Image 1 (tube, rainbow, N blue to C red):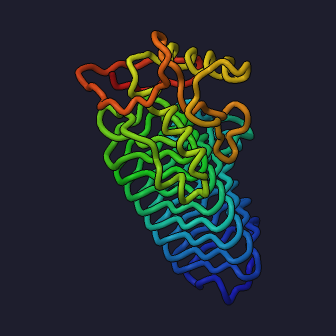
Image 2: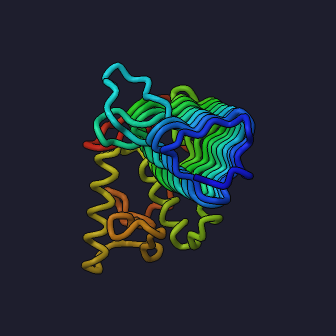
Length: 302
């Protein structure tokens, strides 16, 4: 247990809890059974940390936060489950994060996240690294949020949704379908509105990779093709380029962490004629359609 000098006399710490020597616990906070809190972490006043919660190093927990409470799930029968929080997280006032449903399962929060006031993260969620959530974001159970995602305030996310890396979600959006990586989405219902260029720059993604992602965005969301046709066109052009017979404006490039599967073509030849696709035409917005793939639902303006 941490030094008694760092624990306010009004705080309640269960004897089974393990606190590093320099952990600070503020007034009226409650630390439950089998909790582990690592070095340099600070809990302000009235924080509740329930059983089987682990908090990493140098986290700051704001007043009134409730971490590791039982899941709001009818399937939960009191089985042992966990909340695991990484290092250097800023968790602000009155945030609630629940542990998982299912024996030995865990809700997981990565490193270096900013979780602002009144955010709720439900059971069995997996939050990546360097994620920013503005006030009153609500995330339902079993949601996966990849690295460096930015959420505007008061966003609601349906259960089992995946939000791709470096995506940006506009405030007050209603997310009921998977959000593709690197894109900006907004609205009710949510639409893909552009490429997250600023986020890509901040992440160190080079100009050539951003150009490739921009062209992929145009193919997927600003062409007359549905998603299956766009993917087929990309694959065909990639095959032709490898054989040296295609018409390309520049070479392909991939963003960091994307690997071979993330390599995206810069341009493609039209199905008719021989010119390369610049596709600077203004998008038409008369109709919208949603195309479901095996794993992801993509929102496509037409």
